[in-house]
Amino acid sequence: MKIVRMNKLVSGTRTAAFLDVQTDDGITIKGFRLVNGSHGMFVSSPDQKSKDGKFYEMVTLPREMKLQLEKIAISEYNK
Image (cartoon, rainbow, N blue to C red; front, side, top):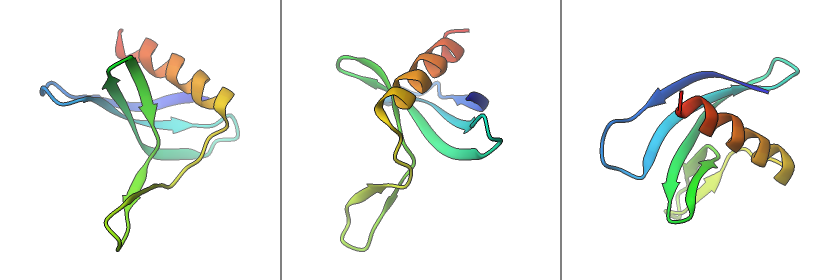
């Protein structure tokens, strides 16, 4: 897995960056966010607002894959 695009945000919002990820199989998933949370940075999956006004994740990652992605994203963000 690798990050193919990262747009860092300079504003004072909780979202630090937007990123696109390419899997080892060559599939690109767009719309991940790197978020500054109260317990440190984490990756938020792409989501979409439904008719009921709630946001639902469009991509669900297994826990170990999400942890790997967070490690890669934070490393890339700090470069």
